[in-house]
Length: 348
Image (cartoon, rainbow, N blue to C red; front, side, top):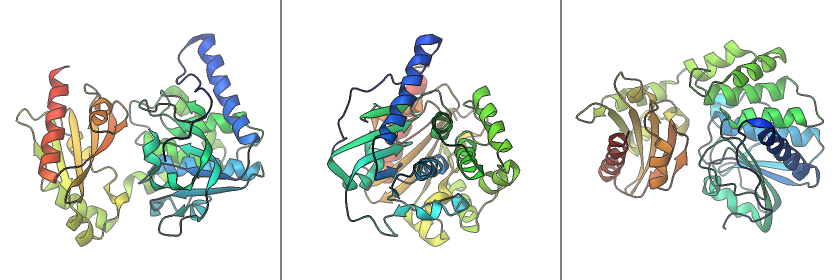
């Protein structure tokens, strides 16, 4: 199924000045109107969900429940086990737990950089489904009937804080913890360049509502599972650099995942190892998912727009963090991606 069609998209980003503020206020009002005028929602996020995707799914589910709306939360992939503390995480249906056997007219998609990122969830959309698209990725093309898009937001959870604040419900510790989790993970523990004064102000308000910041930082940023550590050992043994040492990469095979007992969530942060080395401009992680397919994660020090590079392969993301999937054997995928990054470096 192609992306649902609907009304003309609203302005895609908020800049400065009264006009931009009005546009953002209109987007918030449009999103709340979409929710208020409908019922029986399907809430989806991107495949292989991360902290922001799951937290945003839960924040919307929490809002819908407080508004008395019927809803189903769904993702093709599993909910990362480390996010099991979140309110409603056990309510998110997955492909493994059982895909709904019906379709939905009203869809809310969160943290999806483009329509394809909803994965198999699109099979649950009715032919004439209407979709509210809430996201912060610059590559988002406003694929919803209504769109709540702010590309300078650090996380979709940051946008949802503003949506929930504009709604008639009052935030509690459960909602605050979900929102804080999404912002914490997408800012690397409030260390990345997307950590704006607004992010820190929101985080302060969420802590005042009962969020245990140190506990979440320990759980989400510090603690590692044994399978994850074994996977890191294998991957680091393959760490490779371009001749000028400005590009670094490593890779993981299906055998690595099986033999270490690692899950997809254990890959999170692995791409940062090559990126964090002094002098490296772009770090890459290649995950082989079959004989002819490879998923690529990209992280930039800032000089290279990896979202633009990922788009060349049908992917997307942010200037400093992006990803894509390449239909090629692992050696060829590595060669193609490294060459694309080299070309991008030559242009800066």
